[in-house]
Length: 484
Ligand code: SAM
Ligand code: SF4
Image (cartoon, rainbow, N blue to C red):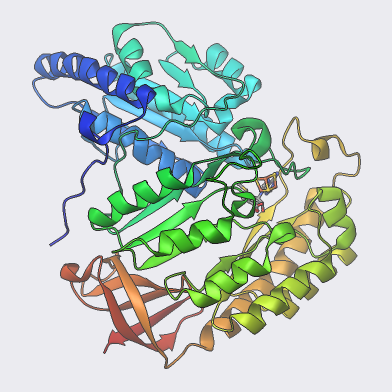
């Protein structure tokens, strides 16, 4: 049986944060509005949360969904719902375009269902041009808010349900972290845990620092309390989330007794009883410490997977990207990781087509891919983001050349990943079972500690269990196997 998932922090007894208590009152108020709507419709109203982008957004969406469920909406995957909210991403332009496409389709649903409410939030809404476009061309949208006031969703929902006008509430920045907001989990056995918000690194291509603000770390006690609650609720795996987890705690005052480093935090999280796997995302290579490697080596609970974004293998491009490491420094770090933690899988992010990038620069990137033997890599075509320094660089690379370089890189990435994966063939590994296989329901799908996917015979009752599996056959990025 799949265990029912509780919504954490949905009652006043669980909550200590003043702002969060205020939001619980708005949840009570919104319940009344949704009850009225339910009577009018003669059925329970439905709500759909559509998420674009990274794990941070996925975690935010779990908070939005918790509130929608608490006030009485029924979750649906269909955008033909009574309340639809788009949680947007703006890291690359194609995410922006997809949102506008989806909004257009949603307007047709609203014509047939006039009481439908459409909301849009997240990173894209921190860009004035996007909000202006919605105000001008998508007048049917009911609620717009940004990343800094997402904690006020219950309050904004009330205002939206009370009004027929478009409600817009965007904050430029915040130094606030609101604890104990209700949160619903997509998976009963695993959960993301934010350890910090924002970013101070200002890589020249990246919009994140502008739309998510400066780094704010959560207090260690709040993170541990959340992990303990999750473990008590049946969670076995947590992923600690931050744009650069290695700078966790740097924003605490000097002399603050609660100031600890990321490796120290990891150690504390590993002590939480019931948690069996601890992952983290993302460590910036420029400040990956020996202390972190030692902590990983000493704690078998910490997943054998390090996602270490490279972005480019050319030292000159890295300088122009403001990444603050060189090709050689990156490769030395990889060597150190492989020496200390030979069983660790290293994955990465790479951007192709950054302004000024030549085929010779891409050769340098390919050289790093081969030397680092990445277990996998996410390859992105550079997307020009208005407001970032790189958008003003004069030497943008022609599309055709970018495409050729991208294809050349992708071939090497796939070959390297296949060689790395194959090394595990025949081994027995612990697998956390995540779901029944989509294509074949006699199989279940799970992940190894190093994040590799495995499909093997089994039933629904295994979901959330950690079992031993023999990795019989490698199929490139995934294995098929059998339970032992
Ligand atoms: N903080 C993480 C780090 O430093 O690697 C990554 C966060 S970012 C949301 C995820 C990935 O998106 C980055 O690693 C980068 O490869 C990619 N990315 C960011 N801005 C981009 C842009 N303008 N064009 C293409 N890819 C981009
Ligand atoms: Fe963007 Fe760089 Fe910050 Fe990552 S570290 S979020 S790539 S600015």
